[in-house]
Image (tube, rainbow, N blue to C red):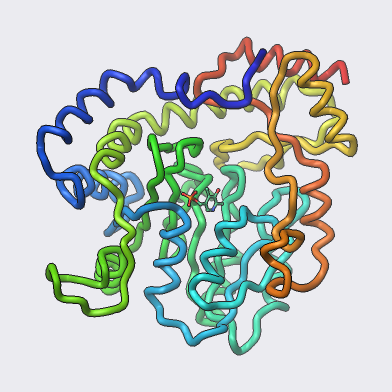
Length: 360
Ligand SMILES: *Cc1c(COP(=O)(O)O)cnc(C)c1O
């Protein structure tokens, strides 16, 4: 059986370094906002040549705190792709704002930049782009719209650690780059974790406060804050893994290359161009008989996954919150299939997946 993912196997190569880091943390006796978090924040900021980084509890919190930092008037509108993972939309709702969905480009699965402008109203305050599946959005046009309408730009880079648009890392285009270190992500912790990167000192101070009960000085609260801190144990693990991020991404890119070369043309493969340095958090194909294909693969010893089976506007939770039809998003959700592409998979694993796929 070829598994879709196996987090235990994925993390095996780091076992000894994790153990060492854990022992150091335990012995330090300092478990919240200590040196591990500070070091990881510095390393993650340096990786992005970003002025600041702050660790938070999760990717969802990173997005939520970024929005909260601006104190936008209630019900202000935030533009977001209609096929994103639900967390992007939840952050907008929890911030007391209104998600305005824009359809994706059917080739890239990222927001269709040509459709953004018509959704902008006098209540629009921000655009949240999502570099879905690890493929960077086309940022040139987005940056122009943001300037033209004086909007804030928040990047959901939860799936795109190390991905680049025209040689510039995702997360560094916007006012904020929001990251998740959920265990399956390209840079995954052994539990929940997230971070924001930013260039602006004022925003840095605001997030630092917001994540820690709205407090600068212990027991003195300046604003209504949250408890959303990256913890010391996870930060220690993340420092270990960050040193291997480029290697993890290169491994996934090499596996993707096999799919691109060997899969027959019945399957719609991911879009590629010289502008997109894709890190393949997910390698998806599309096929009209997706469910039958998934079944066939399983029968032949290959596990696959679907990202995602239900479009956000079709979720029960979004009843009365999101209106309208999003046919392109639905088409993607109906036809997409994610193939094995983990750090622990070998090239032989991928050739085996291809062999089964090409018999369908
Ligand atoms: C994983 C993910 C999130 C949320 O991250 P958590 O750490 O699980 O809260 C947000 N947006 C996207 C696109 C994601 O894939």
